[in-house]
Length: 181
Ligand code: ADP
Image: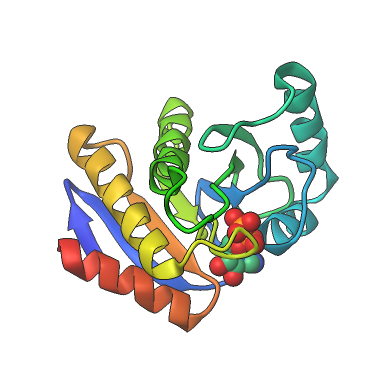
Protein backbone atom coordinates (compact mmCIF):
# COMPACT_ATOMS: atom_id res chain seq x y z
CA UNK A 1 0.00 0.00 0.00
CA UNK A 2 1.29 3.42 -0.89
CA UNK A 3 -0.05 6.93 -0.47
CA UNK A 4 1.44 10.35 -1.09
CA UNK A 5 1.12 13.28 1.31
CA UNK A 6 2.70 16.62 0.39
CA UNK A 7 5.10 14.91 -2.05
CA UNK A 8 6.22 12.33 0.53
CA UNK A 9 5.58 8.72 -0.44
CA UNK A 10 4.36 6.67 2.54
CA UNK A 11 4.16 2.93 2.15
CA UNK A 12 3.75 -0.33 4.02
CA UNK A 13 5.90 -3.37 3.25
CA UNK A 14 6.77 -6.70 4.83
CA UNK A 15 10.54 -7.17 5.11
CA UNK A 16 13.57 -7.57 7.34
CA UNK A 17 14.28 -3.90 8.06
CA UNK A 18 18.06 -4.51 8.21
CA UNK A 19 18.12 -5.22 4.46
CA UNK A 20 16.53 -1.94 3.34
CA UNK A 21 18.44 0.68 1.37
CA UNK A 22 17.21 3.86 3.03
CA UNK A 23 18.98 6.80 4.63
CA UNK A 24 17.89 5.67 8.10
CA UNK A 25 16.22 2.71 9.74
CA UNK A 26 14.52 3.26 13.08
CA UNK A 27 15.29 0.87 15.92
CA UNK A 28 12.71 -0.10 18.55
CA UNK A 29 15.37 0.06 21.25
CA UNK A 30 15.14 0.02 25.04
CA UNK A 31 16.30 2.77 27.39
CA UNK A 32 19.72 1.19 27.95
CA UNK A 33 20.60 1.26 24.21
CA UNK A 34 22.63 -1.89 24.84
CA UNK A 35 20.81 -4.00 22.28
CA UNK A 36 18.29 -6.73 22.98
CA UNK A 37 15.97 -9.11 21.21
CA UNK A 38 13.63 -8.58 18.29
CA UNK A 39 14.37 -5.87 15.80
CA UNK A 40 16.95 -4.32 18.16
CA UNK A 41 19.03 -7.51 18.14
CA UNK A 42 18.66 -7.85 14.37
CA UNK A 43 19.89 -4.28 13.78
CA UNK A 44 22.93 -4.66 16.05
CA UNK A 45 23.81 -8.01 14.45
CA UNK A 46 23.48 -6.70 10.91
CA UNK A 47 25.17 -3.35 11.56
CA UNK A 48 28.04 -4.69 13.63
CA UNK A 49 29.87 -3.43 16.73
CA UNK A 50 30.19 0.17 15.60
CA UNK A 51 26.54 0.80 16.47
CA UNK A 52 26.96 -0.42 20.06
CA UNK A 53 30.12 1.67 20.45
CA UNK A 54 28.21 4.81 19.51
CA UNK A 55 25.28 3.81 21.74
CA UNK A 56 27.65 3.45 24.70
CA UNK A 57 29.02 6.95 24.10
CA UNK A 58 25.49 8.36 24.04
CA UNK A 59 24.53 6.56 27.25
CA UNK A 60 27.72 7.79 28.94
CA UNK A 61 26.44 11.32 28.22
CA UNK A 62 22.71 11.06 28.89
CA UNK A 63 22.38 8.09 31.28
CA UNK A 64 19.41 6.48 29.62
CA UNK A 65 17.11 7.22 26.72
CA UNK A 66 13.62 8.04 28.05
CA UNK A 67 10.55 6.47 26.44
CA UNK A 68 9.45 8.49 23.43
CA UNK A 69 12.87 10.10 22.80
CA UNK A 70 15.24 9.37 19.90
CA UNK A 71 18.98 9.47 19.13
CA UNK A 72 21.05 8.64 16.05
CA UNK A 73 24.07 6.45 15.27
CA UNK A 74 25.74 5.05 12.20
CA UNK A 75 24.09 2.20 10.34
CA UNK A 76 27.42 0.37 10.43
CA UNK A 77 27.51 -2.43 7.88
CA UNK A 78 23.83 -2.14 6.95
CA UNK A 79 22.78 -0.57 3.64
CA UNK A 80 21.26 2.32 5.61
CA UNK A 81 23.59 5.16 6.56
CA UNK A 82 22.02 5.75 9.98
CA UNK A 83 20.06 4.09 12.75
CA UNK A 84 17.63 6.24 14.71
CA UNK A 85 17.11 4.60 18.10
CA UNK A 86 13.85 5.30 19.87
CA UNK A 87 12.07 3.72 22.81
CA UNK A 88 8.40 2.85 22.51
CA UNK A 89 6.13 2.37 25.51
CA UNK A 90 5.36 -0.95 27.16
CA UNK A 91 1.63 -1.72 26.71
CA UNK A 92 -0.25 -1.84 30.03
CA UNK A 93 -3.76 -1.88 28.61
CA UNK A 94 -3.89 1.64 27.17
CA UNK A 95 -4.49 3.72 30.30
CA UNK A 96 -0.88 4.71 31.00
CA UNK A 97 -0.31 7.27 28.30
CA UNK A 98 0.85 4.60 25.86
CA UNK A 99 -0.58 6.30 22.76
CA UNK A 100 1.05 9.66 23.54
CA UNK A 101 4.39 7.97 24.24
CA UNK A 102 4.20 5.98 21.01
CA UNK A 103 3.36 9.14 19.07
CA UNK A 104 6.40 10.84 20.65
CA UNK A 105 8.64 7.97 19.52
CA UNK A 106 7.59 8.56 15.90
CA UNK A 107 7.68 12.35 16.05
CA UNK A 108 11.04 12.55 17.81
CA UNK A 109 12.50 10.06 15.32
CA UNK A 110 11.31 12.30 12.48
CA UNK A 111 12.81 15.36 14.16
CA UNK A 112 16.19 13.63 14.45
CA UNK A 113 15.89 12.60 10.78
CA UNK A 114 15.06 16.17 9.75
CA UNK A 115 18.09 17.47 11.69
CA UNK A 116 20.37 15.12 9.70
CA UNK A 117 18.81 15.90 6.30
CA UNK A 118 17.58 12.32 6.02
CA UNK A 119 15.19 11.85 3.10
CA UNK A 120 14.19 8.19 3.32
CA UNK A 121 13.27 6.38 6.56
CA UNK A 122 11.99 2.94 7.49
CA UNK A 123 10.13 2.36 10.76
CA UNK A 124 9.59 -1.08 12.32
CA UNK A 125 6.37 -1.78 14.18
CA UNK A 126 7.55 -0.07 17.38
CA UNK A 127 6.32 -1.58 20.70
CA UNK A 128 4.34 -4.41 19.09
CA UNK A 129 6.76 -7.24 19.94
CA UNK A 130 7.99 -7.81 23.49
CA UNK A 131 6.38 -4.52 24.59
CA UNK A 132 2.94 -5.93 23.72
CA UNK A 133 1.23 -2.95 22.03
CA UNK A 134 -1.60 -4.33 19.85
CA UNK A 135 -0.56 -3.78 16.23
CA UNK A 136 -4.10 -2.71 15.31
CA UNK A 137 -3.76 0.36 17.55
CA UNK A 138 -0.02 0.88 17.13
CA UNK A 139 -0.33 1.04 13.34
CA UNK A 140 -3.02 3.75 13.53
CA UNK A 141 -0.93 5.82 15.94
CA UNK A 142 2.14 5.37 13.75
CA UNK A 143 0.43 6.40 10.53
CA UNK A 144 -1.42 9.38 12.01
CA UNK A 145 1.68 10.71 13.81
CA UNK A 146 3.77 10.54 10.65
CA UNK A 147 1.04 11.98 8.43
CA UNK A 148 0.42 14.90 10.82
CA UNK A 149 4.14 15.66 11.01
CA UNK A 150 4.46 15.70 7.22
CA UNK A 151 1.45 17.97 6.83
CA UNK A 152 2.90 20.40 9.35
CA UNK A 153 6.42 20.31 7.83
CA UNK A 154 6.06 19.48 4.14
CA UNK A 155 9.04 18.91 1.84
CA UNK A 156 11.38 17.23 4.34
CA UNK A 157 11.11 13.57 3.34
CA UNK A 158 10.99 11.66 0.03
CA UNK A 159 9.84 8.31 1.39
CA UNK A 160 8.67 6.86 4.69
CA UNK A 161 8.29 3.10 4.97
CA UNK A 162 6.31 1.20 7.60
CA UNK A 163 8.14 -2.10 7.67
CA UNK A 164 6.15 -4.97 9.16
CA UNK A 165 8.14 -8.13 9.72
CA UNK A 166 5.40 -10.30 8.22
CA UNK A 167 2.38 -9.84 5.99
CA UNK A 168 -0.13 -9.70 8.86
CA UNK A 169 1.69 -6.69 10.37
CA UNK A 170 2.03 -5.11 6.94
CA UNK A 171 -1.72 -5.45 6.40
CA UNK A 172 -2.47 -3.42 9.52
CA UNK A 173 -0.27 -0.57 8.28
CA UNK A 174 -1.86 -0.85 4.84
CA UNK A 175 -5.33 -0.51 6.39
CA UNK A 176 -4.20 2.43 8.50
CA UNK A 177 -2.82 4.14 5.36
CA UNK A 178 -6.04 3.45 3.45
CA UNK A 179 -8.05 5.06 6.25
CA UNK A 180 -6.24 8.37 5.90
CA UNK A 181 -5.80 8.33 2.09
P1 ADP B 1 9.40 -3.78 21.13
O1 ADP B 1 10.24 -4.10 22.34
O2 ADP B 1 9.35 -2.29 20.82
O3 ADP B 1 8.05 -4.41 21.20
P2 ADP B 1 10.39 -5.82 19.27
O4 ADP B 1 11.68 -5.84 18.58
O5 ADP B 1 10.12 -6.90 20.28
O6 ADP B 1 10.23 -4.36 19.91
O7 ADP B 1 9.22 -5.85 18.20
C1 ADP B 1 8.89 -4.80 17.37
C2 ADP B 1 8.44 -5.34 16.04
O8 ADP B 1 9.58 -5.59 15.23
C3 ADP B 1 7.66 -6.65 16.11
O9 ADP B 1 6.47 -6.50 15.33
C4 ADP B 1 8.61 -7.66 15.45
O10 ADP B 1 7.89 -8.66 14.73
C5 ADP B 1 9.37 -6.79 14.50
N1 ADP B 1 10.70 -7.28 14.04
C6 ADP B 1 11.55 -8.13 14.64
N2 ADP B 1 12.65 -8.30 13.89
C7 ADP B 1 12.49 -7.53 12.77
C8 ADP B 1 13.27 -7.26 11.60
N3 ADP B 1 14.47 -7.84 11.41
N4 ADP B 1 12.77 -6.41 10.68
C9 ADP B 1 11.57 -5.80 10.85
N5 ADP B 1 10.79 -6.00 11.92
C10 ADP B 1 11.24 -6.86 12.87
